[in-house]
Image (cartoon, rainbow, N blue to C red; front, side, top):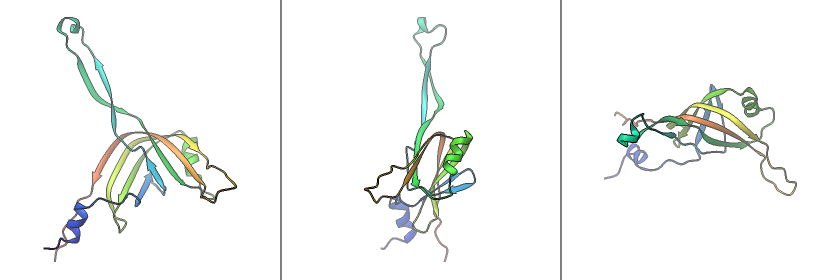
Amino acid sequence: MASSVINQRKRYPLMAYNFRVDVGSVTMRFSEVTGLKREYDHVTYRHGLSYAEGEDITTYRIDKYAAITMKRGTVQAQNQLQDWLDARSTKSMDIHLCDDQGNQVVTWHVAKAVAVKFEAPTFSATSGEVAVETLEVMAAGVKVQHKEFDEPTQ
């Protein structure tokens, strides 16, 4: 028995090249996004009688900022990345992984992102490569949201 297209989409991995990044209310296109992860700082402390009782108390609920690197081709008259760095503001981000038709399937929501480093492209007269600029942000509060597939009704 042949599987339906919906069942195949549920079981096969998504292609990583089809993604979109929303920073605040602005949609930006990047050629590469790396470092997206969620971590907690591990804080261990002892209470006042721990020397006698030998009890450690540990909590894990402090979001740890992680570096996310985003690269894109340099385009004339578009300086959103540099403006974000200059503004020194915290923004929310959504990185959407899309299916073959451009529909959002998985979204990584970043609650807090602060631009910390902007890197100009490498200039070389001997290469024919595209000029790529890099923005590094420190991000925390990452949550993953998966879209559910609905079976078409007939």
